[in-house]
Image (tube, rainbow, N blue to C red; front, side, top):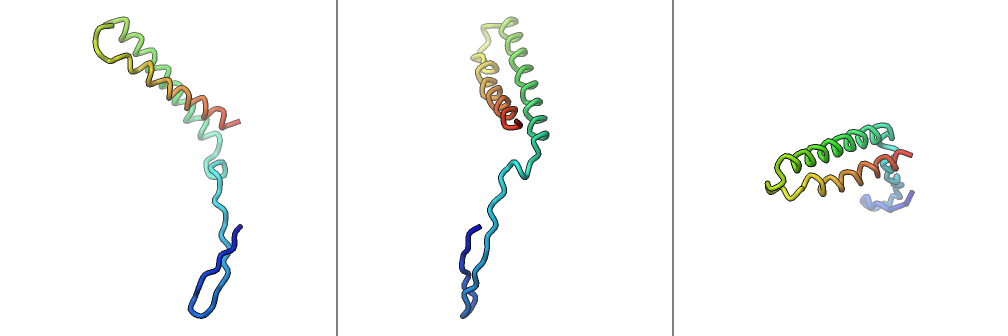
Length: 85
């Protein structure tokens, strides 16, 4: 807690500010774990669909975005699981 002084007319009144709560106190770990699991499942589905799309028509121009864009989602979903520990 930090003390600050507030000017009220001719009086200087000390105030006490509460520290901000961390995210662990606001959002339960189970909720973050569920979101991480959903994100991981959707990431795997995107990868599978992109592989199927490559096998069906490799010449069409998606630049295989489903594969390389899902890497960031894979990393964040794993980070969410690590956060829950």
